[in-house]
Image (cartoon, rainbow over all chains, first blue to last red; front, side, top):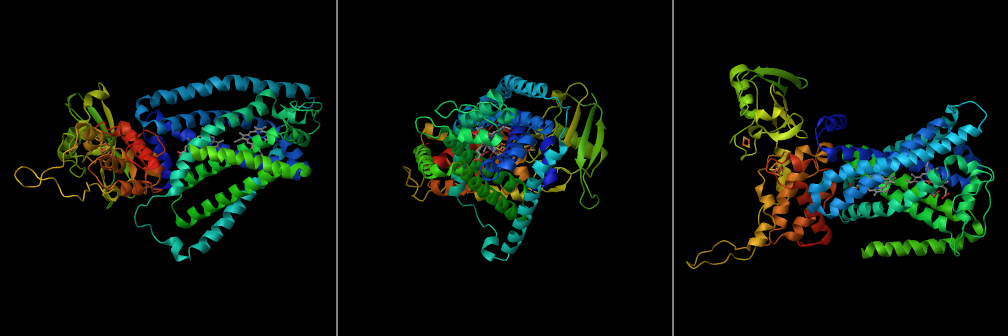
Amino acid sequence: MTSLVLTITETLRYRGKLGQWAWVLHRVSGFGTLVFLIMHVIDTSWATFYPELYAKAVDAYKTPLFTAGEFALVALVIYHALNGFRIALFDYRPQWWRRQADAAKLVLLGTLVLLVPAFFIMAGHVVSYYNERVSVFDLGLEKVIEATAPFAIGTVVVIGLALVVSAGASFIPSLNAPKKQLKGSKMETFMWSFMRISGVLIIPLVFGHLAMMHLIQGVFDLTRVGHVPVFTNLGPNMEATLTAVNFVRLRWDTMLAGVYIWRIYDILLLFLVVLHGFNGLRYIINDYIHNRVVNRALRLASFGTMIGVLVVGALAILQSVPATTAEMLSQTSQVLIETNVNLLVR
Amino acid sequence: MKATIRIRRFNPEKDKKPYWATYTLEDCEPTNRVLELLHRIKWEQDGTLTLRRSCAQGICGSDAMRINGRNRLACKVLLQEFGENPKIQVEPILGLPVIKDLVVDMEPFFAHYRAVMPYLVNETPPPVGPDGKPRERLQSVEARERFDDTTKCILCAACTTSCPSFWANGAYVGPAAIVQAHRFIFDDRDQLLKERLDVLADPDGVWRCRTIYNCTPACPRGIEVTRAIGEVKKAIQAGKRDF
Ligand code: HEM
Ligand code: HEM
Ligand code: SF4
Ligand code: FES
């Protein structure tokens, strides 16, 4: 067993083949996307709960630093998705291992092929936004700090609390008994399948979401006056947006054949991505953090945050128009049950 | 031909930290093996250089080390692969405590090996031969072939100590132990299948494998290590030998 620093430096020193670097990138991209996701879901939920805060957050999203982050995020998600598909494929077909190095190269190539047009289109949004503006280039650092500081502070507070709870829990003997022998874990066995199946299901969902939010229209369009939000013109209630809050509400109120399609879409995306991402975080914590108290604290903090994000995110989607909440609940639960049944059948 | 060798040295009685020492050797042959160069350094230049080796022909599995960044057996690496003026870097395998210089403590590795019960279990009495004495349990050629690849393991630890998951967390049983488990899981004479699959379904069992593929090229015996791990995962998911 080696220390965390040694593990990282030696991983970089060992001359493994492409697979080793593919894994490093997979881990970094998954972790990076998860950090963004936590912020993103909480921010988006403000559209329902604290509209002024959402307006502020979207304002920060339009600063150059966030724009750079947005490009990075798209690259990370695309790479992680393609490489995740490769991992899942070779896990279910271990006998194909001789092709895995080619597949890893194909993943890099595929990422590039998807990124070039995506970046091109995204750059188009950026350019047109800055062309329309009269004011000079503004880094908007205070906005960035204002938007991220609560999350940084929140992280410190949550981990601090978890450390206290975890330290207290070290007085419970049954939690601290040393492990004697290896024993099968149903949960771990299930999570392995879940990571792969959820990953593959996320691909169309997150690619669709990114296409709507980056390509068809960009972050800057969220607040564009007189703009019809992406795919809200499917039903009768087509309207132009005025503010970012309005944008989200119009999206979530869009009905197709009596179904709130974007709410169902976002609920599915929310649950799959959050469960997948936080389980990935659990893997990372268990890999690197060996101190019992700290390990338990971080897992606790991560689990608590996961529940928080799921509840806040789901409530925001369901509650955005109170009158229809009940109807909405029954529709989404139906969909969730159906997908669960499908998962079990597989 | 002249060879330059950098060795990562560490003497726990003298050194606070490991350090790199450089040696030059004249009159080397392209057909020399790295092990022979280490011998010459020990015999001609510095008798304190410490390493493990036994058979010197790739059979005992004692001399796995990190050679130019990758895990290899020093007795199987020829100088000729490093070109005209070979520069070679040698260091201990990673993830096991260094005892001295190139020698690591293999006990954690063997503890994982023992954890997977690396022996055949069959409670039925063995068949009786024409002479009335017990004889071997016969097996079809195909059934033997199923696990042939994983019988070749020499427990050198090159695969386990090439694995980023093992470096990160030594509780992971590691590729070598899973290869050994594979050898018995897919042996149709064995009767301990359920227990074996249960042991490997531990959070520190196969589920720590992230399908990185560092172990496969590290194996000096050419065992398809990652494939074997993958097959064990599928057997656990299916709950049976043939998935
Ligand atoms: C887009 C489709 C996606 C696919 C196909 C996918 C696939 C995968 C796969 C196969 C793994 C490996 C799991 C294992 O080793 O057991 C993984 C790990 C991970 N994923 Fe994803 N994933 C996707 C999206 C996401 C998203 C959106 C996030 C962030 C919220 C995320 C975060 C993670 C994390 C943090 C890990 C753990 C990394 C590690 O253990 O090294 N993934 N993913
Ligand atoms: C910077 C890039 C992104 C932008 C501008 C963006 C924009 C939005 C917007 C406007 C909504 C509101 C609902 C809607 O219109 O459908 C939303 C919701 C959502 N997005 Fe994104 N999105 C981005 C990237 C992502 C990524 C990469 C993920 C997945 C990892 C993701 C996951 C979600 C989820 C789960 C929701 C539902 C939120 C909730 O329940 O409150 N988004 N996004
Ligand atoms: S599988 Fe190969 S690398 Fe691993 S211990 Fe056995 S012989 Fe060594
Ligand atoms: S010394 Fe026996 S394997 Fe190299």
